[in-house]
Image (cartoon, rainbow, N blue to C red; front, side, top):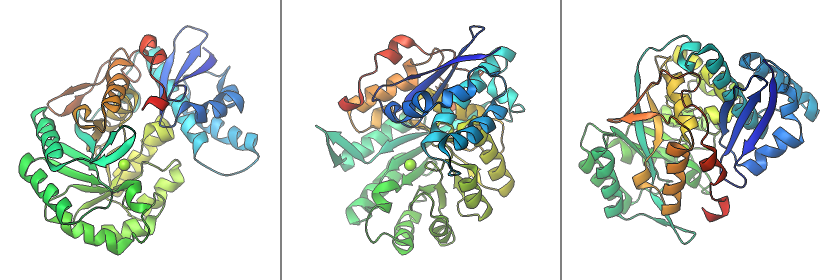
Length: 384
Ligand SMILES: [Mg+2]
């Protein structure tokens, strides 16, 4: 069997989808967390596709190395990561999908077999909403209503993208959230770029925020600093009882190794759409040995959720999976977009029941094929 073509979908859409074709009619599906107009030049124009066309698709690990080495040669430099790895990730995902379809095995069997049949999903939301293109903070009532709906839907964990606002009013909202969800539901907060882009934000600011959040038994704090800043993550981790999580923006195993070997986080958050299945599995196994939990970043599509479910089922440290809370997003357009990419874009989206994602026995990623009618008619990025 030989790879004949790599096709990219998405136009100016926030996420690019990839389909790998073979001469025997079996196709594999993949996704990257980067938009098409940035990924397409790497795959089609610069020739990443030519590195795999003609190769046996059922050797994804070998082809990852081939892509990584030959892309470096193509660029004439030894730099690592970034967009090139994002593009490789989508192809790698599709190659594992093809391999599973050829062998009639789900990904979790190819990775050595499952240690569990289901993995907890957490409802992922944001404290911000978009109205007519402008970003606003949601009100207390809006956030509490969303939290109540998440619990009613069966979620046992909820995360909010929050930034670094921890004044009295914000603390009142967090206190009300805890009261609303009760003591048994996990609450998490993502500092993210609104925090680390703020001038003056440093380790001491983050420790002060953590002291507030400790009162409400928060389960983890996400990406409190610039993604590669290992030292600041470690300093915060050593000064709070809350788990510190990071990793969604990292693209090479070497960056992950720094965080894992230096024990700079309690939770590592790789994303297979950023680093591929081949490297995600390595990260998860390294973290497992180091006693670090693995809770991936996967808000974008069924391909991320389904892939992560397969991998997390095989490792002991696969604790939870990020899952978009459609009822609690920032706008109607976002709700529609996330619904399409999580429920409609593939034949068999991952099964969510009572707050847990359940393994499928279908081969490869377990998602079947793309629904091309949905894929081809996704509205443009400009409308979001
Ligand atoms: Mg995040």
